[in-house]
Image 1 (tube, rainbow, N blue to C red):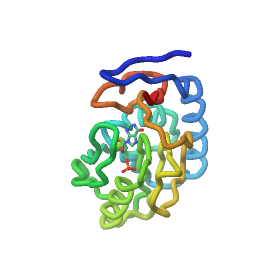
Image 2: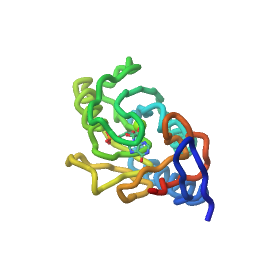
Image 3: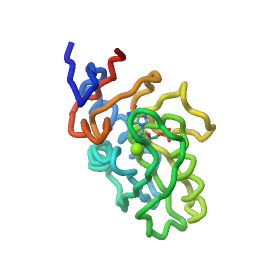
Image 4: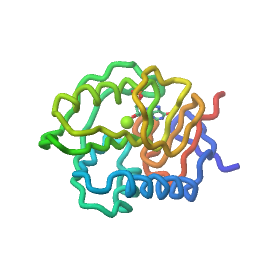
Length: 179
Ligand code: IMP
Ligand code: MG
């Protein structure tokens, strides 16, 4: 089994890049059907969702606008549950279908904050796409429209996700080995 080390932690491979790419293709195919005839604005949540977003958006066959935002909320491996600020959104979203692209939805605090904020900008509809979803941690009822993988309550890195800033470049996803 492939294991890697990042700083003081060890991780084992849990989702291979081929599986990730297949999941992204499936999501893109669904979006290409669902979002036909809409004015689409993709909002990528940086930093974690950058890799998912580029692989997803390049498979979308409609005319789309793309924007990136940044939320500061997470340190180390424990969510502090406080989402402070959303930076970078200056699009006119009136009448648009917004698709929020997230790397992972854990407690749901970040997505809840974003939904509240984006709703005030009066889009027609808001869809959520997340590569990873931890259902056992999720505290909200907002529907996650597109999910790549449902995962247990474990800490993961790779494919955009980090541990203390490292691991985002890995093409596979790795799970923390508890020691
Ligand atoms: P939430 O607000 O609790 O849903 O957490 C969302 C954010 O926490 C994600 O966008 C990630 O940046 C970060 N996060 C949650 N779980 C993990 C993980 O297992 N690995 C790396 N980052 C994570
Ligand atoms: Mg994130």
